Image 1 (cartoon, one colour):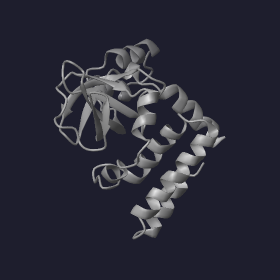
Image 2: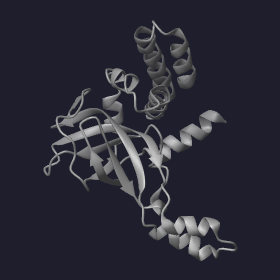
Image 3: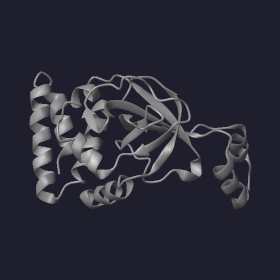
Length: 212
């Protein structure tokens, strides 16, 4: 049951070109993007691989992972929560036309320049209002062919790093066939064993999270 649910989510949610939102604020380490609440779907999933262009020519991209989705309130939402017998059409209108965007938080784990992938922070942040997209299946496979990005995730303090890395690896594993998925997760486990050998409790936790 667990594997079936994850397979459906990852297959539907990270299946290629999909709009995630537009950049609200950014730095070289990550960025936040916003979208309308009515557009939240499988594309906005914890651990999804996303990309954003760093130039108008789309020759350089930042690659990141979604680590948080925040739905803040607004004045009308507060009123509707306290109201009795709210009409359903009013609730739907609030979700469609709310004053505050849903915010998606992303940590940068790499970049792509002229088609070449690097497991390092991007050279500069994206500009405000640049569209954020899901990475394609091919981009995810190419990016996760090497595992050098593990260190950027595991050392990040502002994110739930263990759970985020595990979710990302599950996303990436479902882009492979069954044999390839098992080989990939074993490879990831060995990489983690070398990196977390000084913290066996943490290692055991992450390994349990990525267990097929």
